[in-house]
Image (cartoon, rainbow, N blue to C red; front, side, top):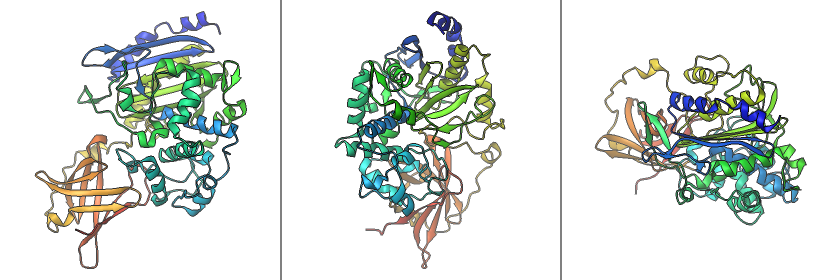
Length: 498
């Protein structure tokens, strides 16, 4: 493959991207295509600021979400090279106080287990989402979070485990995960624009604002600060920096003729560790595995290593084909957008000289539940703790109105869970509302001490069931688990009134 030939293969891509943005109501997109040392394309489409009509450029910063996970895995590889860490030595060897709910996991869990999502722990996203707790406090909370699978039995996508892995890396180096990434990766790779917090991003001259679609319109939404779980997804970057990152992957850890990370450890990162679920699994991607910080899947017969990400108002996809030495980066400022995927796959089809797959139609079917190829929507790699919406027939039912079984004030109070922290129920002019991690959720009584609670941000309705003691007084609150069916409900105990 030569550069001129690849340039020609991308003829018509601009039109395709504009169509995708229109079809999926995207605001802005940044696209880079790499072949070996050559940058074939780095271009912005649409707007980084819709209201002011400021266009996306190759320097525009985007939150890359879970595409950050590969950086965390890379810092672990660096420490393995430095003989400060071993992939298969229990974490307890390095962090004496480290504890999981499962005693077997406490004693045996390794950083490899953390980084390939086989801890046995489900996502428990509301432990960290919008929480004010520190990284250390969240690591300490792990011991109170119940697993739903046996240790090492199943791949389960995780953010808390990546947070803990980054915390371990920082502790071993006597600093923070952020400092290790900055000094060991960003600085040598010349990733001079990348930052670790949306607060820092907004101080830069060129950054994208976050948007989501509502009622057919793109509305601006607040930035989501996720610094505490930073190693799972807090990096903000642009095309210029991410090109350097992907070229580093293609060169197997080599920089300016020297190995920044050994080829042996880069191979470990890029090697399948666990079979996993994929939203794309089907004819084109028949098998899905996870390495360390990367999904590893054959795409139409070609080895592909990739990772997407999403956090409020942003979505990304970073992919490379090691045999063909091709890399693709797509960054978006539209909430939950699948355009990074449809665009990346279309580019790969073009560069491989294959007839383009209509990924828009395929993913539409996945999202609407019409496809038999996969039961999951394209959110496997996303931070957003969303679940498929309630089926239409359930949505249209009018909720039954019940008289309260007891005074409304009986439900008011503070409820605590050692892992999830404090949940408050208070009375407002509109009725009862729940507050967890400063997120306010309206409550609607459905009878028998049970409420439908709306998590507006994610379009979810949860069922809260209050429990009573022997005196028929409210003493606990049970909430079904958000993401993995069959998981034990989370039980909050009512705190005594002062």
